[in-house]
Length: 306
Length: 226
Image 1 (cartoon, rainbow over the protein chains, first blue to last red):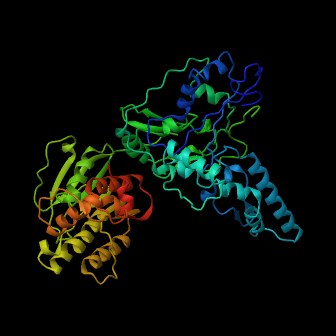
Image 2 (cartoon, each protein chain N blue to C red; image 1 turned 180 degrees about the vertical axis):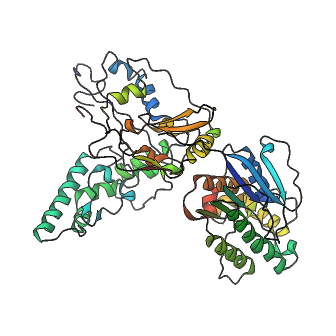
Image 3 (cartoon, one colour; image 1 turned 120 degrees about the horizontal axis):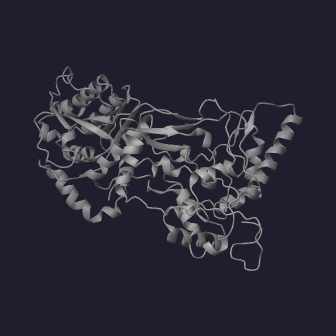
């Protein structure tokens, strides 16, 4: 949120940003991150801050929060992974801009040297080495266990993060590893009661489609659909039957819809033109049947003022 | 984009009267992703008339005759929970006919019926190079399954099975009596594991359908307990 702060009385908030983060390791397939955000806005501590405001824009993004223990190899011939979305985000602070700037600078320095030396299309091995010797690596190394502890519950996660960061000052003699990929965490829909979310009021809470509309998302017509399926029968026969069709809820843009055929059988409709490129489906699909391919250049969301 | 109508899946199960198989069969009958469960049986099962019992089709099958089972319609997923003990089988050769030959026969039948995914219960310590006969046969059966042409192959290696059995396995009973009270102190891979967890883990792995080979050790199976 900026300018001003949530609940800072006296500040005149003219144009604010408000975000809500849902960990994608959740188990209940009835959960909808979008609806959780809408419901959160109705909380008595949050509602007064937002009430009377006008919705200006909307967007959604998956945050790469696994930290140092999830970081892939960051260079390949002719390219490098940089920025907080490559995995350099410090999840315990939910901050990544500084990491994005730093890795960008480190990669640029390595690229400058490589080009000066007449090299091209080889691996930029100086970049990961420079990262390992940077203050950013030190910072991420100290926070490396954060998500792993949080996966063991909020209470234990808070206590252990406090011990690691405050008592030990980040000098932690142990390292925890991630136990599950997010797509392995969903349990069958029959294990839970469906969640009933309140209807949007159009003032404080909104529906998905009108929200997606103001994300200025656009894809050139007649381009191949960029959300593809490995097996076209799996969405109905497994995702819908066993997991209650979770893609219709975790997608923040309503791209995935289960609709009825004329004979009352189900089918999955993919509204790829609505896709805001958050990549949640690629991460969370329990059968890993959705393959996100890059759409035609220039398509996607166009967030004004974001 | 609209997709063609997708039908529900069909499963083939072998070993449905056993400790894991009987629990697995009940879970498969309750699983909404399956419309038909075909069971290969030596003798007709006595399945209680519970939810989903109408989905069950039994096929009396001679596991020593690889040419049978041709009347079964198309299958998507194969579940194998065949296994005995050397004592109950009567001899090492008879044991091998169940834990190796019958396993390979069912896997081949599944492929002939069009199945693309397979899950099989093996055992902790299965190793084709082992000097222990039991572990060696389990390992050799695994090697045959791994060499088969399924898109997704899941092999589970449970530790000591915690189950209600109709047959008598004195060594298993004794081991369970000794290990149950101290289960939490035993490393997860060696701890007794409930047959419900084994069955849940099998269905979960098959329906997620990760391509290629997955070998699931008992500590991972434990996470499906409860």
